[in-house]
Length: 110
Image (cartoon, rainbow, N blue to C red):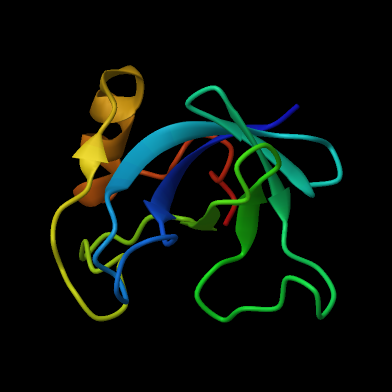
């Protein structure tokens, strides 16, 4: 399963882009439809039942909604508010290298 450093933001219970966010190592299944993050199992939003422009994954146990995306070098990962996410220690060194120009692990070719 691919592991990627990702920006993850909790959407449920918060106004637009006001939820807590993390830069974290996320494990994806080979189909990229399921992600594992901080002990949670997240499934990709599909179909009209879960259609929501503010979330692209949901927690299978709690139904909380999340936005999961690759991090941006300019650190404007949230669309409207620009508070800094918590950077998990297991990916801090690679993320800081990314911010100054290095490729993210697994994305050396784009």
